[in-house]
Image (tube, rainbow, N blue to C red; front, side, top):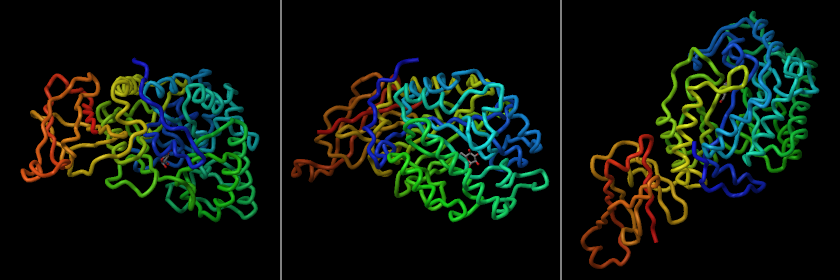
Length: 427
Ligand code: GLC
């Protein structure tokens, strides 16, 4: 694989500017269930419709599996190295999912990695590896906890899982749970240096008031002033998280599509429904052209290695990004849909056209200042492409800076099997 040579993103400021231009990140769904190839958490409540390959495991059996979690030390390094090669700018790890199992040795309970044969600190390994690679680091944290005694836990008698019908806590129990929640977040935000992003989930089970999200947000921002928070902390948050979906119209603020490579978040050897590397690259182009970020998921196996299907896709994306990453990272959306049949981005006076289907002879871009086109190249090879401009005849005669259409010849040999990028330099 080639080393990433694409330009980096602008440095962060307290408002999280880095995030709104990051464009590409790595999501990691990992837990003790990965040892058995189970989806994270959902098997213990009997599965979930949207997760087509999710197992159904009795709650006790599911939780008991935690005691056997014994990954290899330092597994995160390989994921982060792959993320770096792909040009990804940030990473997010499931520090705690709905099943309540903490990947760090939390002092707030004994249900964590500290009670496994491994005993290390998987959050620390992840944060350190990410930092060493020069990337920004995020942690996924589930507000709901299907294991904690005060939550209270989900049992087989509560099946089937119904949204909004979670088992009800006692008042005293809930007060203790909220204290526990604050304590765990305080640990994550004080013991690991700078944390760039918090990715909440599971908030649908209670109200913003019950979670005390205002107080929680205030605590988070006081501990980590520059932090970016997703929209799943009810009533708070800095950006939207369309899940497994690219919004047709970009939401009015920063956003991120989170996407699985197959149909599962965690590693599942029975789920062979993988998207092709090409489809993943196309999604990346679409997301970037609408001003969003793609948080692409991997699900490491129980020992922490990545399955060959996932490595293969990351390798292909890395190869594509090594040549074409400048058309994605740190760019802005460019043209309106009527101007070009495909996603487009820009950086300064350079326009990037993402050609996602095979052109017959040429492609056309409309509404360009055609006399200001300096150069048109295929980005990967640097090959100069022939192009010609056209505008209304009257403008041709009397307008010094006419708007018209640019037709670019795209010869077969320059086509990239994943996605061809054409760069148009304007004066
Ligand atoms: C959903 C699922 C969860 C997954 C998350 C990622 O909310 O509950 O399993 O981690 O999406 O977006």
